[in-house]
Amino acid sequence: MCGIVGLFLKDKSLEPKLGAMLTDMLITMTDRGPDSAGIAIYGGGGDGLAKITVQSTDPAKDFATLDQDLKDAIGKPVAMKIKSTHAVLEVPADQTDAARSALAHLRPGLKVMSVGDSLEIYKEVGLPKDVAARFDLSKMTGTHGIGHTRMATESAVTTLGAHPFSTGSDQCLVHNGSLSNHNSLRRQLAHEGIATETQNDTEVGAAYITWRMREGASLGEALESSIDDLDGFFTFVVGTKDGFGVIRDPIACKPAVMAETDQYVAFGSEYRALVNLPGIEAARVWEPEPATVYFWNH
Amino acid sequence: MKSNVLEQTATQTFDLSARGLRELNSSLHALSGATNMTAWEVVNPKGAHAIAAGVDAPVDISVMGSTGYYCAGMNKQATIRVKGSAGPGVAENMMSGTVIVDGDASQYAGATGRGGLLVIKGNASSRCGISMKGVEIVVHGNIGHMSAFMAQSGSLVVCGDAGDALGDSLYEAKLFVRGSVKSLGADCIEKEMRPEHLEHLADLLRRGECDPTIKPEEFRRYGSARKLYNFNIDNASAY
Image (cartoon, rainbow over all chains, first blue to last red; front, side, top):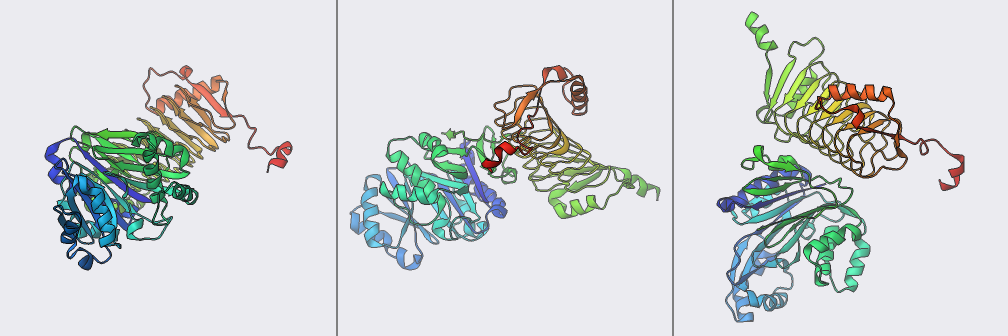
């Protein structure tokens, strides 16, 4: 069991409250996933800068002079925002690859959580309320975001086993369910040069989507083919630069509820996660159909 | 004393967000056939789980909003109305009484129910009536895939359409569908609608508060081909 929440804002006036609304939804889903939590939040972008969100097990040491070290390495300005175990590095968008290569040399122990114009991913082990407080999630602003509360079944309770998982620039994936063919798929993906770092099933799901898109599929096509290629139970919510998508496996035993008003589209593993959203009483509330890809875009 | 009696017979309004689920359900469990607190209104349900589960008294309970998992589970005798939509497992294993959902119901509505009447005025999603054992379920809208899987007895009435694999591995439950059936499950077949079925269906449509313009003759009946659940010696090598 895990909990998923998602919120896509249509009404710009709600953007300053995105973090607060998502945090409330996330904490409501604590019963479904008390061991880790994470959030992917989309904001900013369009300023010619790329964001690289990194995670460290020793942030005091790793982040101390990281911005200066990275600036020296790539010869371009670097801005850094530290939040607990994570740091968001902003570099000129055309320096993204150079910055990633430099980071791998400068701080080999750092894990890259996300890369993109507007995406930041934060995730850690602990109760959702503690994870939210650690990253000050309720103060974050943005256009849309997805969150996840984890009850681990397929791999250990670690930061890297928490969700969301990055699937590419400005893209991420969260999952409720369990994949049963992740070991064989992990081996196949390794042959394709797609490396995974953990024994986690969802990481393989994310890597699968990365691989399919590398082979030319659109995100929608990659999700469609996941119905055939992934064995097991899943409700996936994927974040994209412009919005989010939802897909459930054909059996659809993992719950999903959606709500839409003029102001937002919201996703919750349970209706409980949605009850404090503005105007929820009058919202259109429904269950997404099995084996059907849904997208909401700006 | 008189005012006290009046207070007790008035509708009991219970604010779930203020007083909590355990207090609600323990108050409802304390009721018996002798109670004069026969009308209850639960406000601020906010999708909470197990609202009014395990009630065993002839009382009327209205839940003023949408509910989470297992609302009205194991119900006996009570009439429980959800003035919103219901989460997974509404009226699961109900024994008797009536449960009415004004909105939609999530998966496995009425699962394993042994008796009573479950009415869903919107749509029900997957696995509606799975393993039902005597409950009668009336759905005004559509139902999702794998509904009435291994259903043993009772009736499932669907005024709209049914999803994939209706009645898979069915025993003796009676299925009535007015709209289309996306596919029938293993050993589920269409059967002749006889006068006693039309009469039974008319009664269910009436008790299920269906639109009176909907006629029993508009439905098709589905049931078990009875080829799967009897041991067949010719299939012994398959086991």
